Image 1 (cartoon, rainbow, N blue to C red):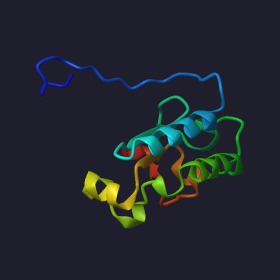
Image 2: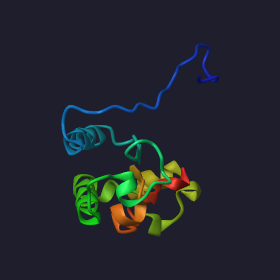
Image 3: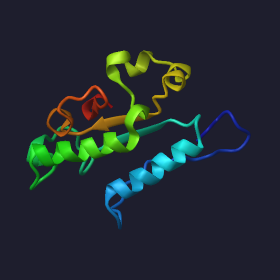
Image 4: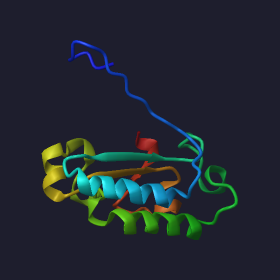
Length: 128
């Protein structure tokens, strides 16, 4: 709950299986971000919420190349909006700095090394 207001607002973390491929939803989010230039989105991506699992333990019946292809499609969708860790640590970056850089998408990935090829445009989900 938000204790700064006279009433309480509740926020949630939602997990679901979607009806459409993930990229279709990510493209909708990109459109929403384009229409809302002061918003920042944080994704925490895993199969079942266990960030300790790696490789096919995290994503059964997939290859590193398939997981990397998905991340490439994510990058193609969000492009320069993705937070770049080579510019500094997230916990040391202000919201104003994120806005000025145009970096409004933060991507935490399970199986970070294999799924993103250790991209500076993603962070290890075990850091959450």
